[in-house]
Length: 367
Image (cartoon, rainbow, N blue to C red; front, side, top):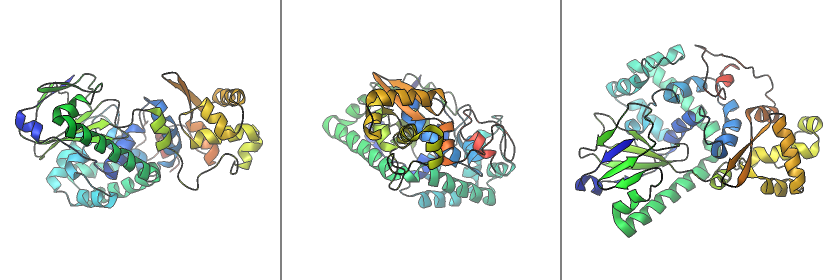
């Protein structure tokens, strides 16, 4: 459990802020390696994982392995409205601050590409290569959905602002249930699992607390701070509803539509109706059977039958949230639709290694 202690002065300094696309990209790479919350992220992970290639898999494991520390770009860079602004601040950060932050990963036992070692000594070429890799990862993992992500996060900030306007900071903190419980003057995070250092009691010591919503954070808030930072950042999950997730990961304009753009090879392999069902699940992650039948233009019974067949073939998966059965694409299904059947299982890329879920680990082997 984390216990965050407030003074009266600390409460007056609390604010809610969106950190921006660089933070979401970093947290997204961390999320991509996890196995939890499949109803929220299963479709996005299956679609995104095969697209993270080149330096991307190594950067993902270096910045945020579920089994090790998470590099804190948030307090280092601060809130940045666009990716370029964040990367410019990263490139211009003092060498000692860069070394201090990237040292979080030292001794974690992670297998990494050799060039990443330069980050620990703030080598500017390595920092530039990191920025380039983050740009590529952002392009495939976050940029296609950024309009929806930004709208969702701004809506969260507005909601929190209304709580503060109506009941002050106490109402804001009390509204974070069940992920955090306000017991004045302490905010408790019962299921806190630190990804940097184990902390039981934390005192702000006059520094402002920034509550930063993130669609990729989860399942509980995470605290980020440093001895030389001006503020303390608590990133908390802003995406908790599978219905919201389905809308968030809806395909951008120009993506496949079930009735018109079914890949001919997939239709020949599976049959046209089953291929349509697969494409609908790809384009609408975490959809219910009713939604699936409506979008595919078939009866609910037929949708359930085809989904069961696809699930048996390992192309889709089924998760249950409350009373809903939610269909999502698996990595194998994404590979089939994307025509990347040449991807190989196993450990690849400079430095080798294995990613916890294999979603982006296997992508590295295509280098």
